[in-house]
Image (cartoon, one colour):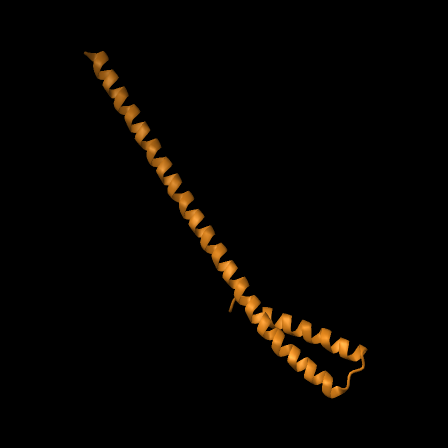
Length: 104
C-alpha cells in the first residue's frame, strides 16, 4: 500500500464539496457550477499531490533520524559494556597480582 495515497483525494473532494455548496448558495448556473467544480478538483488534486510528497518526505526523514539515533545508542551501549569488561579484567589481574605477592 502506498504511503499517503488518500491525501490528494481528501483535499480534492473537500474543496469540491465546498465549491459545490458555495455555487448552490449563490445560485450559479449549472454550466458555471460545473466549470468551477472541475477547475477546483484539478487544482486541489495537484495541491494534494504536493502536500502528500511533503508529508511522505518528512516521515521518511523522521524514520531515518530515529534509526540513526537507535544505532548510536546501540553503539554507545556496546562501548560501555566493553569498557566495563575491560575494567573487570583489569581488577581480576590486579587481584591475581596481589595474591601472588602475598603468597611469596
